[in-house]
Length: 323
Image 1 (tube, one colour):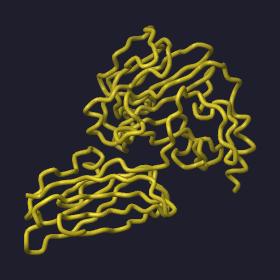
Image 2 (cartoon, one colour):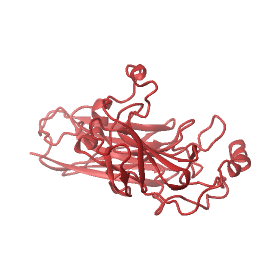
Image 3 (cartoon, one colour):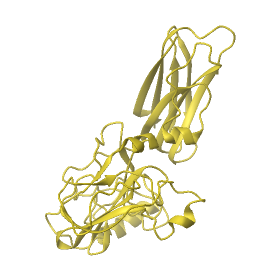
């Protein structure tokens, strides 16, 4: 493929000479292998108009120059997840006070020139620098000139500035040049994985997956799904319908979301829903209307499985009791 050939030729020469001994840790205080946080987007390594992350996959967007450590919903953001220093250093600049409105056509003008939102920059030794963007309004806890250690809380994950979802965008720079911490010396090609890393313990690569799953009595608004408020926990046996939805990230064309709604007596509905194009985030739902008799009392289980090329890459289930 042309893209792979271009990467093979250009990327090995992209990185500057790197200082030895500089290692970083994830800038978010949560378990990246669990359900409550994940990496939504990586640095775009394709020098053309295409998109390629360090795994030669598509978890990025054109020109993206950092790594986005995300929360599944705004509900998780409201509960509060700390942004922490990735390495020891000195705070050289910060900003707070911008609202967590998220990015849209309506907010574009107000964040122009301040796309990072509420943020922090840390200077490290030997010309290294890290920047943390989109922190929650009013949460920044450090001061300019303060020395911090790895893991020092800087603020909370938010959605300020040019942020379409709650996350902290981490940028790493060496002498002012932006570096991919997953490929710091620029040796990546699509045939040969990067043989270097800045991570003390590299986060596992998740090629896409499920962010949330829930029951409702009608197809929810997408805004409510992203907010984390769509799932209903108290549904009556005379509800007009039962709906199961799955909220996904990193889907590709021809991926399948298999949704199964299981009642206390039998499977009510199962359906395979195919994604026609890549989507950073999206949701799909299935449902069934109640006809005359009430829904049977008891436990109902919803299961979502994201399938790629015939293999399940992520699955999640939820349960509710109708009384």
